[in-house]
Image 1 (tube, rainbow, N blue to C red):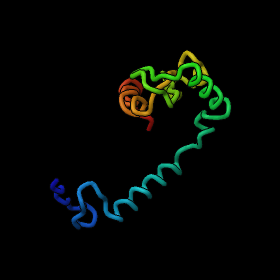
Image 2: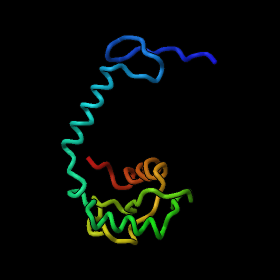
Image 3: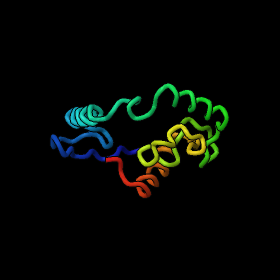
Image 4: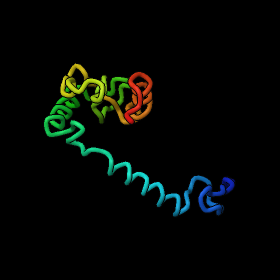
Length: 119
């Protein structure tokens, strides 16, 4: 099978195999993510404490299937985001079990359209 043509890096100007990033691009992405993480409150400050951990574990035990696709659920999602309704953070009626792909794809896009971006 033929290999894909290399691409030119926008940072260093060198050719790299298709889909691979140069060391400079990787370092810049890592630094960008570190800056974003430094600004972000820790998990407890965002409402994910011991109480949430227990509720999450219990919820997944009772509702082990993804509400969207029916596959095995690995995440418990707030239907109405915490930033919109912080008082419903531990309300079981505001929770749904989702698999990682359903949570990261359609659900997050729908939340952004409906409630706006976090930042």
